[in-house]
Structure formats: structure tokens, C-alpha cells
Image (cartoon, rainbow, N blue to C red; front, side, top):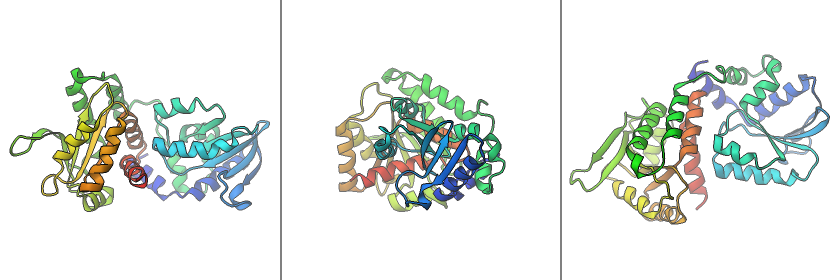
Length: 323
């Protein structure tokens, strides 16, 4: 299926449509019985569908989002944890994929089962063909799960790149290649190692933002993201506040703009988060952190025909709402 079709399908979905169609597939499936949409009975109580499945009761929460930031996933886990002492199976169902790191984290929670787009496709293979929603039906019409794509190749390169300053050039090149694949032609092709006029600051990666529609247009208008500045840090240790101050020096309202990204391999120190907040509140310079998990999620979205900037959108929302 074409990428634009996949994105249109996900964009057109609402949470209710996904919940309604999933309940409908369960009612058609011989392994499910006593299927009830809880929203029709008790309102939105956190559990959307209750049913009997192969001898046990399943409690299903539906989410329409194709991806989740780590903080949002933690919020969902906290919400569902009230059911973990129950004998019933707790299921999180959504039409997307988790990153490998998120899957690894969720394996610790043996009380929770994940129904992502691949698992739903396997369970309801026959029922998907009879969906009423054409948008949802097209969403599940994916390419073969194990076919190698350009996104797979880029993710393999990223995972094979060793951490540490010794490999900074390889990491910078991989970041540039991934960003170009994800966001061009909406953004200009990456410009590498460009210094300012006085050669005081050297920006690792710059991508011009001339986009006249969609989220990139919004970022340019709201955060003065005339150019997307990316500083790649292939550190094996945690990034500290000095890295945030460094990219903040690059950001100028009269220059490339006021939006920057730090690409990194590990979680930042608390001092880096603190400086990130200070720079935003004092100077209106917005800086976000993008790690390997975020790159993986963006590549998965691109592979499935969904806008990869959804990850950046969630990053900014989580940052702003956390202040």
C-alpha cells in the first residue's frame, strides 16, 4: 500500500472507530464471546472492551495512537496497573508498533499483554477483510512483516554504530542519513559541519524548513524553526548541561532560528533537563532530545506510511506539559 494511503488511514481514525471495529472483529471471531464495550455501559473507565477469550476474561484498553513516548507509555501502565492483581488478562490494543526498548521494558510487566498492529493482524486475519471502516481496513493492509526496507537498513546501521567519541563521525553521518530519509523533501537536505560567519560555532547538521503546510509549517511559525539544527552526541556517558548550552549558542532569532535537536545515545543527566527548561523559559529557545528509541519509532512510522514527525510532536508536548 502507498505511504499516503497509510497515513491517511491513521489520520482519519478516531479512538471510537478503532474500539468499535475491534469489538466487532471479536464478536465475529469464534474464540471470543460475551464481548461488551464498556464505554456503552459505564462510560470511559479506562477499560474499553471486556470479553471472554479462550477460557479467560480479557480487559482491553484501546489507544488510537500509532506510537507512544516513554512518558506516555508509563502513564498508560500506571492507569492499567490497578487491574494487575486481577485474575483477568489486561490488554493494551493499538494500531501501531512499539520500539525494541519499549518491548523490552514491557516484558517486565507479565500482567500486561500487547496487541499491536502485527498481533491484531495475526489474531483477526479473517475478520479484517470484513471491517466496515475502509480507513482501518487499509491500515492493516501492510507489506510482508519481514521484508527488508530502507528503514530497516538505516536502523541496522544505527544499532551497529558503537558509542563513544571515537565513532562520532560515523554517528553524525548515520543521523544525517536517517533525518534525510525521514523528512526530505519537506525539509531541505542536511548540511553537515557548517560554521557561522565568525567560525565561533559549528553546527553538526542543518536542515532548511521551507515547508508551507503541516507540522513543519507550524513549528516554523510557533518556534521560529526556520532551520532545524541538530547536534549529534555519540557519547557513551550521559549528556550534561554543557551540551545543551552549546546548541543554545547556535540558536538565534536573527540567524537559523530558535529550535534545536540533540541526538544522543543515552538518557541526559538531570542537569541537562534543567538547563533545557531554563533556556526555554528565559530565551524562548526550544531544544529537544532524540535518542535511538526515538529514531527507531520514527523509522517504523515512515515504514508504515505515517508521518514520523509525530514523535517530535509528542516530545514537545511532553516537555511543555511537564513544565
